Amino acid sequence: MVQSRTHNCNELRIENVGEKVTLVGWYDNMRKVSKNLGFLILRDFYGVTQAVVETEEMMDALAGVNNESTLSITGTVRERSSKNANIATGDIEVVPEKIEVLGKCIYNELPFEINRSKEADEAARLKYRYLDLRNPAVKERIVLRSKIVAELRKSMIDHDFLEITTPILTCSSPEGARDYLVPSRNHPGKFYALPQAPQQFKQILMTSGFDRYFQIAPCFRDEDARADRSPGEFYQLDMEMAFADQEDVFAVMEDVLPPVFAKYGTYHTASSAPFKRISFLDAMETYGSDKPDLRIDLTLTNVSELMQGIGFGPFDGQTVEAIVVDNFSATRKVIDKIVADTEVISGQKSYWFKLDENGEIVGGIAKFLQDKKQQVIDELKLKSGDFVGLCAGKRSEALKGAGVLRKLLGEVAEGHMKKDCYEFCWIVDFPMYEIGEESGELEFCHNPFSMPQGGMKALENDDPLSIMAYQYDLVCNGVELSSGAVRNHDPEIMVKAFSLVGLGEDDVKAKFPAMYNAFCYGAPPHAGIAPGVDRMVMLIAGEESIREIIPFPMNKMAMDVMMGAPSAVDKKQLDDVHIAIIEEDLNND
Image 1 (cartoon, rainbow, N blue to C red):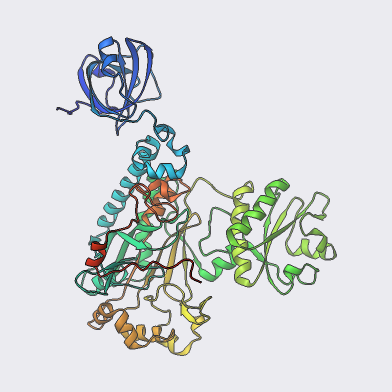
Image 2 (cartoon, rainbow, N blue to C red; image 1 turned 90 degrees about the vertical axis):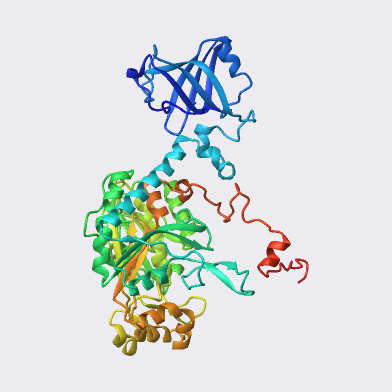
């Protein structure tokens, strides 16, 4: 059986009129006019072409053939009398002399209409992903992803980075999420772990004498799904530089990323170097978030003192943060939705009031502010029509709620958000340590492998909570693309840093033996970062869900409903890896 095609379904033009051609593709649909006339649309990866069936013999060849079957059509190209400017091949049509069914679709009805699959239930889309991907609108996102990855790879190579792949089966490492464990057949009771990131390997590469490393790295974390995070696995543009500091990393990323966003993005404008830099503490106090959307010009104002003694219980003795929106004309329905959404997203209640055209404070908590009316107006510099949103609670709670409220207000308030660009920024100077919410003990705030600012001197003499780390996040349009750091390459400083969280030198050697030992043989100062490929493509494509840009995504429960994973395995497979399944008695209290 010959399936060779002379052209694809997006290739034929008016200059091909008179040629004999063979096309292959999917039977998209056919409009039947009579028993010997029909207009068939053939679709392949590249586009569509119309074939006009004009004989009863050719119509018979399609009898009983369902849509989405694959066909081979051989015929002659002619000019269309009624042209279609909406498709690239709209000037021509093919008159078949031979139609062959290459692969039958045995179902009369499909789970959803191919060209409208994005409107279908997500569970159906994921189960029949191979049909969903036939939709050109869905397919183009995967094509876009391929182009972006190729562009990133080329740019990194042009910047003298060497692509090196690191192991998938490795040891468990504390990267902040649960590991996926793989039992060992040859070593009973022991497990490999899928890498949450190539962190240790890339640092060891720096100690091995490689100067600039990168890879499009697969990472595996057993964590819950979010709109901007896929459960199970994801990919990142992982990179590391020897004899480098924070500025070197910034320079590379500021040169690599904006051209890719500008070239392929929904918006064609991206921040140019240098990106704005904001300290972690300033970001929280100004925007209520360590991943601020700088397209929104609204900022937070601390009004804790101003709001004391007004007789409103939620403000008493609490931190109160305000966001002032000038000339905000939203309806009460819109305001109520913003308030409700703030609580759903942040877990914090929000409050509001307005200054009307008569200079009166109205709406929301207005009745509690009448005795301080002028002071409130003066301190917040309010003008007629201004709206004030507020959040209160412990400092961290008030800031978190206000950060969400700021974002929601910015998206609705006219003139406060630039929506046609990509705004990058660096969040820098993260605290090295924090008090854990659950443990109540001192813990690493971010990456434990980061170099503390001030080095050994700071670790020995300063309050641990005051020590900043050479850690940084790359943020774009309110989405965290990446975390990175200048690494702690000095074994003595590393041991001291871990000792503050209760881990001694023996613990460090036991947990990170290869990296610790490598550093003892002369390690270069090094730094790196790893922007998430999935999140970048999602932003570039203008999609709200990360699942739209992943070829075969899992659902929110980390299940692959198309393949049926995770799945049960037979006893022999479990015996081979020395695993026994113990079923709990659910009725046993």
